[in-house]
Length: 233
Length: 137
Image 1 (cartoon, rainbow over the protein chains, first blue to last red):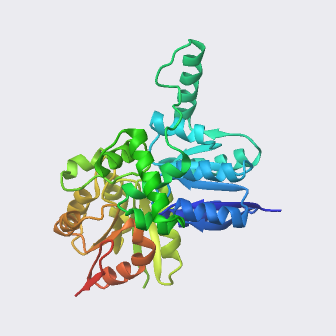
Image 2: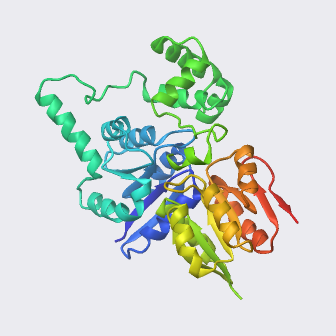
Image 3: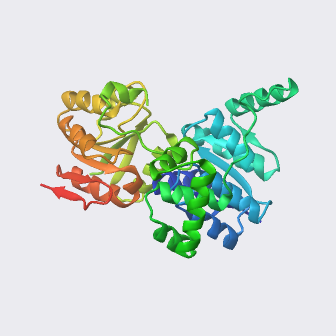
């Protein structure tokens, strides 16, 4: 029986590239694709893939919360996170969310097959940088340190994070209610709770929080970039 | 005669996606790939592509700089930018650098084929997110 894989990325061109690579393996099949986290959760529950490959920066529901929701529904899902950055924070959050694999988009052509093979065999696959961060966290714990390597539990519930992302993306409470099949009143209650928990007073604070916590990602504006600046991006 | 296309993007996975889309089309041939502007300049000199598909943000040499140098060396070469920058200003810079087409990566699967078709006929193709594409003679 073939290994069934669900691809989740908001760029069709990336999904197309991933599919072309994965389908070189005769025992694997891409059983579906999704362009945001909400669609991914819906399709994963319906298609029951063995492996889900998830981008982190996506509209509506980011990859980290997608991973959390998938594993909450079914801990058997094997999730590989695909990301453009291997910052310590993103690595720690991916591990805490339950990802079994972590690969950089820039290295995907090289690492993708190894990552899928590893999770297929109930192993984990991480880039060398992830191993360093995991080791540093382990050593910190051994030293009794409460330094930066210890993952912090999210202050917000999964539903509150989901609503925070949608509000930070510019949706009104009514639009969020429509997207999540909730009443506007329920969304407004969640919104008040979020603002109270985080001690925020404006939607601007919420947007900054969403960016800092990888709920949304913004592209660098090009206006301030010279061609020379771009080489470093 | 086949349209000879050269792909330049620092993410191999994106190049693979572009290649998959383009190779489905009879009469188009992907003749080479590079992961930055400097490599594109070096590799394309012998291959003589008709169209260069260029990312903007890349290490070593970005797409705008590569475009200027490529156009200077081969004025008949057509350049199509495929980039994540959904920005009118970046689009202007790309056209000023000598690009003939501009497609945003998130819409590449939708716009790429029409863009290649246009620039292969030496027409301008621009498409930003949320705006209608323009195909100019």
